[in-house]
Length: 304
Ligand code: SF4
Ligand code: SF4
Image (tube, rainbow, N blue to C red; front, top):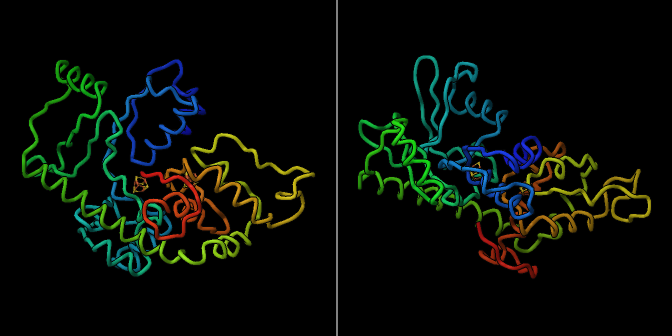
């Protein structure tokens, strides 16, 4: 979403746009805003709660193998109350995410570690968490997070485009509990994956990046990497033309340049044809100050 606004809407410099965003979409927009690539004053952001996303190929495999359902018959899927739920011709089924992920199915690995479940840096934070009773499935929760958000809601109400009512205390409690459960899950996965890297991060980087084929997809698709200072140059000892893989220093330089602004969107990893766990490495480096699951590398702590 952030790349779309930056590249195809000229960074919203001369137009106002409203966009629906997940946490990682929003963070990458904010990062591009800091670099003057997007004019955030012109962007109205409507955040939605996000329990995570699933790679489509993995989703089909999981639906077939774990749910015993033909993926072509599935009409809807969602993550709710700690379950991955599918609706299909003839019924619906839910299985606990925990159970699926312990067996290697489930959400993308970056989503498992994500702790930005309700994007309150947006102008409005919406979504179904906390919508209960007869409103379930028919309404959205709205948290107003900025003056811009308040303004659009009051204008929509005045124009009779939106009906609002106060959130029910029970709904607020459920929203908090759902968010809390997802945050706990994120913490669990961080601990598990970062602890595994605690004593061998450098060896892990060297081993994983030894498959590198220089397609540069990770740089191209990263929403916050706006320049490509890594192009091959005959005089460069890191990315010499004609040699693969590049020297591991190339990767360290890339991680160093991106890790302080990496939003853990997982795009680099998702699109890597040789399956280097790039988002995991970047994430591990960035949060080491917060969690101390991996040794300190000297970077300033940064949280999201
Ligand atoms: S990283 Fe995954 S869980 Fe987090 S906001 Fe993005 S899509 Fe949702
Ligand atoms: S480095 Fe990877 S995970 Fe981080 S912002 Fe870029 S594409 Fe997303």
